[in-house]
Image (cartoon, rainbow, N blue to C red; front, top):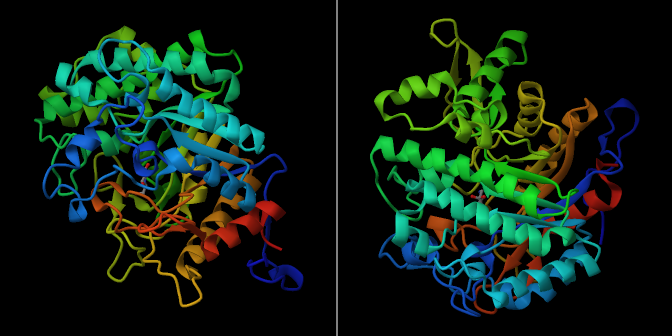
Length: 466
Ligand code: NOJ
């Protein structure tokens, strides 16, 4: 492979961004997006299986029945990761493979898949990082008690988390409880145009209550993992914080950005770190605010070892004395650059401001970038190469800003690119490609793109530039 970074320039203008020696480089996927094998070895449907069968819910009525067939091709995929030089792999578990029904009896065949996957990774010297919940809630929880609308969902989630920690904990490098609260709650329980499973449209009170049950489920899961897993197993979560960036780098805008982060995360990360909902959130919810107890709030704030940040697109913030809270967000102007997703505006400094603001605001012990990447309308050329120059540019610029965060001493410990390969992009089905490896959906063949070659070079040198 050739190195694709910008060639070394001479003198002070040289681009060279070395990362800390123990920095961890990896890639991420999620069960429903890659596994397929939707009804094999005892797996029962998740809300995404049900939702994707609803006519018109997904682009071209596609679904995850086959996805990229990772369930059967995991050995090939681990070999691919090895060839690319990945040091870690973040995957998620399909909960309904493990607990196929409400009876609470685990399914050994479901567990066996993850044991084999983890063993394969470890044999290849790739660290396994496991996400317990990446949106594919078992359908039986919906049928039985209305999913996250019920406190029971938090309890069964904790049982599942404890079980997985006991079974697999000693072979894992880290566990994420929940991935991106906002997406499965705010997009799954309210129809704002881009609807996700379970595809409901509930009133604000129920949405707030479901949000509360989900953060409570996270807290109970942390406790269950600590109780059942090995003492040294790292526990955290992966959250898509609003990717706040000060509109200009001045002390007032930076202070305003910190406040914006706390308030915009008021129902998710703020209670997890502070043990209470942000007053601005409770005030705006009014009579629709969630009902909770002090014990639940204490559980939500159970200490975590690290926080994972999924960083994609910026939200610019300014100091604004004309508002009561002292800040406002700034719209991206016309012509602002975007990648191939309606929401994917490009703002590489999210990689600096995200970790910095989270570290300064909550004194987060360790931060991992658990997702970052972009969709690009990739097509193989006549030589079957995929020249995803746009993604190479996106990754390079983002990594330069991540380097700034590490260089200034913020505790960024690792980076997982989204995604290892093209996959099922939720409501967009297979029409959006986020992978550094191209998937031919006719043959399911994987082909590393130019961005995979770029990323391999970064990992090999532990640096951007050279
Ligand atoms: C974040 C989600 O965790 C992942 O599932 C999704 O594919 C990416 N964003 C891209 O939209």
